[in-house]
Length: 532
Image 1 (cartoon, rainbow, N blue to C red):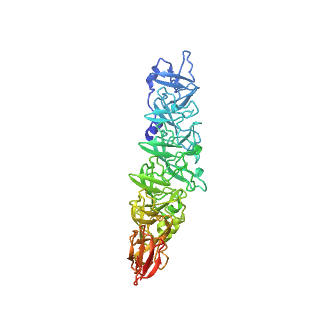
Image 2 (image 1 turned 90 degrees about the vertical axis):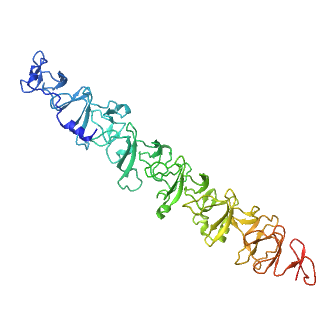
Image 3 (image 1 turned 135 degrees about the horizontal axis):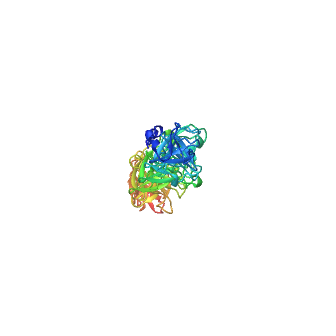
């Protein structure tokens, strides 16, 4: 009902009946000989406190016998209204001035087809109490006054005060409207009473009311194919939140960055508040969810699952590719470790692996427990971020290095037969041409396929001909069964079938003694060779 329609109906005379001079001819007993209309009984006495009909209209005789006009009439438990002509109105809104404490300029009444004012009989707002008028639903109190604003359903009264919205279940618009709100309604409310700490006045939120006007609160709701969450006060939860139902507290609005309980799951909503589902989110987390990222305006990729929850702390396959996410749900890139059961791209909880030099990375990786795992996810986090396997060129702080990962993405360690190279925590161990094009890799004497050290060593700086080093070239390939192979520093090497260095020196070796090579050397395997 349009506001202006109501006003016109209320403030104008209805002109339903014109009691002109012709009315004195009624045989029903109407009389205006005194200047006021009365109804006389058979004895000529004025009828009082009663209704009498004339034509199609009913009229009310007051206690003094005069016909009531422009007045609210209480007859028993029912209320009626007679217009300026005295006729009972029906199917009509009427605005009447009242002496109640409301802020309304007028209070609205609606009188049905029988002339009775719609009113509440149960002292409680229920669906059955709502009256449908011109397609809209309205609530009325026991006196017939239309209710408006936030309504206390248990007392069927208008709630007043700044916190009226907190506990109320219904919102019936303004005093000059009063229809039960349904669907989406944006309202500005005072939030001081529901904030921790100092309040800062009013805020604007979206609320959703069902077809009967009841506020949706403490629940999730599917609306037009999208899922929305509402806190215990009925506010639509938007942006980052821990929109997980937790007993009596229901759905919480702010995301608590310090709450790591697995029963609580962060959610992200789109611009209109709908929960994101099965989609990527490129966003800065809210201040409550992660203050550091919020302060730094640090964007990350997040994955919203089919239930709307942000995927956290694990590897997730999405559209055929695998991605890693930390405890907060941020997609990880670069070197990712599983440390103490949690996924992270930081070796100490603060600094990223790729910010280290290669040697520092190997030192840090070696400090991890035997059950810890390392993976590599594309460093191009904006465009990719997926898990990689096989050979990868990875940028560390000091340079780019070749790394190798298993088909499941785990960093290889020790000898990899597929590529015939030694790999330490994913780093392919190979000689550096600036030092030499050949170098030794320290291995276990009992198991030559297992690394002992994690770096390469060069002749002259270490004893690499001790039978516990494997010779590798500048590509990292193991040099098997080599005799007198010479490096870029003119050092000769002798290796066995596994590439183990048996000899390293500045002279060639020979299998037989002669006058030209009579210096005898016993190799680590017990065999003897000769040098010049």
